[in-house]
Picture 1 (cartoon, rainbow, N blue to C red):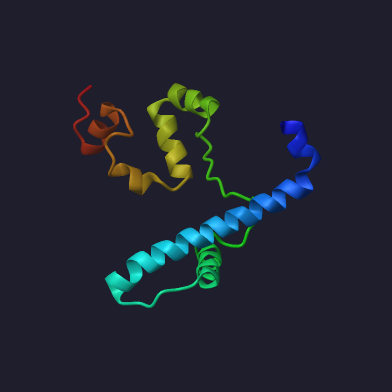
Picture 2 (picture 1 turned 90 degrees about the vertical axis):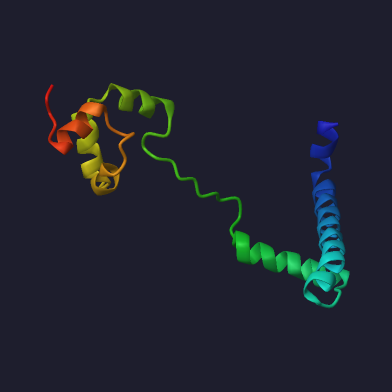
Length: 127
């Protein structure tokens, strides 16, 4: 089946797109006509207005970009980074945060540093 779809991809992909647009437009139209007149007192819409509403919402809420996804990968997001983080001493972690300008924000979070770090900050360094 995979070879058939790949062979006729110029036929199946546009067909799938047309069917998807028809389904999205129909579902939006049915939901709008079922909910909006009763809840907000709005008028009903036809299929083409629902399709236009779908396209407008895609533009407004998803942007017009293609397949480009914005991933927010942090330096410590992968397994290698976690291992490096776990091997760091508390002083090295503090220096890393100071470099990244998170020091002020992280001072309020007691779960980031070891107990000895928070005791040192409070002045009860009796170890």
